[in-house]
Length: 231
Image (tube, rainbow, N blue to C red; front, side, top):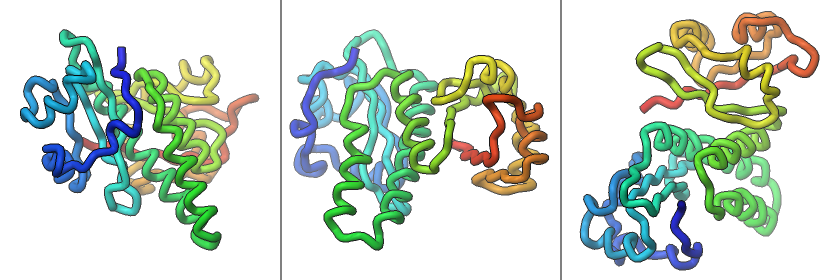
């Protein structure tokens, strides 16, 4: 269950309301996460009245500047936000920041009214209450939209097996998902070392080698872009 509040209620001054730690941390591109009862008294006084017991917030950076944040909260005092949720939230913030930066670049030549409208539209998609699956879907939708891609997905790294596993995405058929996982970290590193970060592949032969199978009806990617999210 997520907390219930309006966007206007949280339009606050960070320093004035005792959230200077958040402002300083977010400005450095770092996350805030943990149990509310372990946070400062000032932070608890704002969050607990909304029945928020555990929270994670990731900064959205646009052109290396702090633009905003995206967060998850839980109302169950016995539940803490998991590391998986934290990693997905971090990926969400990076992807949304990239989408907003692309939007800004596209509207630079337009008038200020068009620029404001485009940024407002990008931000409006965040002003909803989301569960983990919805966050993943929203991230992938924004990534695909911002990059004019037909599909997007999120993979999570498993330390024990040294592999990446599919968490969610948009426009990926189930049979393709099963064929494309798990991904070996060592195989991915070979491509990153050879082609750089972000990993951008356009050569059909290289793409076939990367995904480990030839193109097939309904799945014949012409370009692949991959961003590793490193903690």
